[in-house]
Image (cartoon, rainbow, N blue to C red; front, side, top):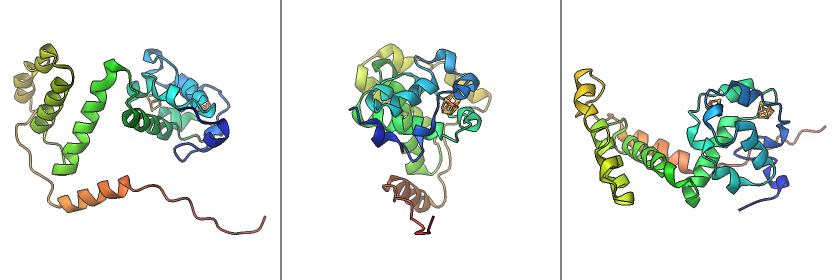
Length: 193
Ligand code: SF4
Ligand code: SF4
């Protein structure tokens, strides 16, 4: 769905219209050369109202949220917020590239795990991710991929079969509920100019 540029003056709570395409975000991005479009090109698409086109780019799933782009932007554009919003859009509208659908599955399984346990239970996370991936594409090789790594990771203390749940899981539930609430518009001060 394309929306007009005017509607995108504010996107994901940041003033994307302030971007003047200097490219400093892209110059500092450690993953830019792996992306199908660069970060500044993504922001230009959003400025032009091409939100769906931006959400279909593989670049948004390559981003590791290191915040380098945000920190370098001379216009204080919240670059990572934009990319996060594009990911949400892509997940909601099913427009992520087919070869990146598993990234979305992993992110959903990760959040679901934190929501239930208050922290990550690694075994449960892997089971959920692998099962959902298999139900989606019925790929046995992908189901078994990395299985042989588990013993090595366990030996090195990098993978645990059990984990304690957070004590106050109700608090975690409340945090998730709060995050799911729609953002309220910022209050106006009513001052004179
Ligand atoms: S650094 Fe900021 S102003 Fe420059 S291209 Fe990136 S988002 Fe736009
Ligand atoms: S947050 Fe993402 S887009 Fe920004 S510099 Fe890091 S990897 Fe690149």
